[in-house]
Image 1: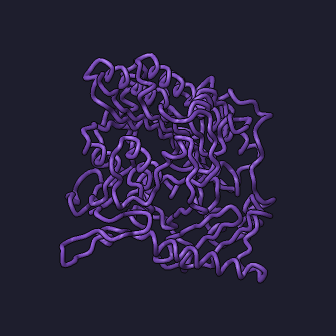
Image 2 (image 1 turned 135 degrees about the vertical axis):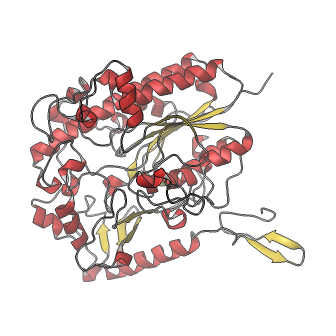
Image 3 (image 1 turned 180 degrees about the horizontal axis):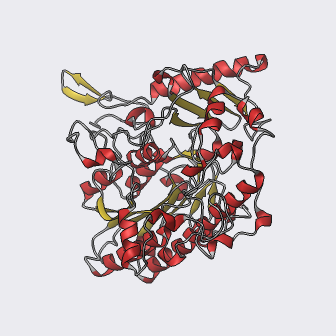
Length: 521
């Protein structure tokens, strides 16, 4: 009897908060199909991304490396071609990795001419992926063309598809102009169904890996009908934020800078004004749209999973559902993915292993860098020594590793990237732009080279509203946190060839904790 093919369906949504699943008790998250997948697999409730925004976050997911090693610190920053990624690795075993969506990757300038048009966009497709359908992130050419091909007359400004159908621009109770049948989520879903139907009839014996990327619930924050009204207003939670903008800004000068810099136009087509000026009612409207977009994705995930079952591929496919980064959604008077708050880095992660356990909930810390090693391990393929992540396969098979991480790490660059680097607070040197955060169960430490640090006692302040870095009572913890971050960065710095050494017998692998063993070159 032939061995069944081993397929991988990697569903990556964009800007989805880790708490936003119905199965976790979130009243506004209408996610019955994703909840069902969680009951049929393993749900990781303390999963964390390594970066924001999309470019660095996806670089970590798809290379298995921390930002300090792959160095894609912001959107528009190139990815060094020397780094292996999930697509290039699965090609080594004869898989043809397919992409629907985007990876927000800028090519290596050492190997690419400076006049290449990809350098004038936010990002292209990472090396190794075969593009089944590219959702370009600047002009949305492929999406708008798809809409026009379905008999819809595009407005002179095609971005007007995301305007409110009625009423003013900005946070709104109105649906967007484009109907759900022609939304960008439908674009992804339709292409996903087409792929699954195609592989069933064309070389069905060949294993496949599909990166299925949904844009939503990324801005613009407006949902098509009927999803715009799917979530009752009464279940929307109030934002976590200080009573006034001044009170919020008092935490740290960098936070004060962001509160004065964020524009509503980045989140609502046609809007004006500052994000920090949004009222509680405005945030409620924004959240209703956000969760409407989530409900729409859940419907399409249900259709994708139904197609897997209908084509007989469900029980030989590893299914991963996750996001690149989170969303502030009004918490701390911010929108988007920014800074050091949990809302920007805590992510959903559900994995269904056909041979794994069902309905397990894992609260141990996991990170986006774990996804590439997990997929390669499931495919019985060696994991590149450069990967910083650790396979999650033991958790999927019902085991609990004896040793596991007790903290998570993520980074952000205050200087920003595409479409233009952000201005730092006045008088700040460019070298002060990097930011690194270390989070344990009890506290969070944020290091900013050009500024005072940030420290939260999460036991007494889970909402991260009181920066205690300057409090004399916390100076011992501040020292411990800074030393732990330094030790982490020293022990997890890029390995490259450091696990190899010349000896009289020739090039030999030396033991590198958690990475290489004797004989691995």
